[in-house]
Image (cartoon, rainbow, N blue to C red; front, side):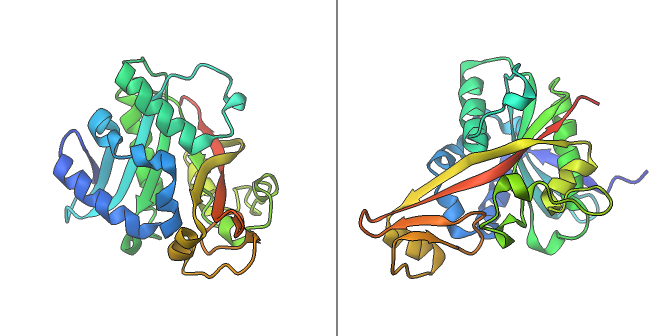
Length: 250
């Protein structure tokens, strides 16, 4: 069978992977780039380069997607995964790598399919490649704090209710949850405190190109839940809910 895509890790070609990383910023709403925990994101390429990769078209050598993951030492019940999903996983993965802790499971941190390649099944190809890459290091199961990419259309709906949305074929309504389900994952539970983004009112206005004239909860384009703005305290907080999904050993 012809191989359509191949992975190239940061350990193999750091220049290629780091150049692709620069393209990722344009794929996210501006406010998503200001999570305090994400300030440690660049450490992934130094401390865990073998788990950061690009997916490349085998015929053209064009980079079609970008992926990040971390190995974790996690032996607790899957149902007890913490509410602080993404922030917890990034910090834990980096700290354990630095300390030399032996991991037991892979955790997806990010998959970005670059705009022109969307709608071609590349997200599923990338997720499968990530799982296969983990298996090379003895990590035969995986978890993911998945960012449901249509939740922003229902910002006032609780994440608990949102994950109850399913299609007639039994697959999740949300496209990213569906990608994981198609390669063998199941929904575990929400991680309602997955990311926390804080800023001044001026910063939030800059990030969103909105003008906040009163305190309270505001719907912000791209946000999965309302942003709480306090004009009195000159402060805005966004707490992003994600969804824990589990990929068991195959």
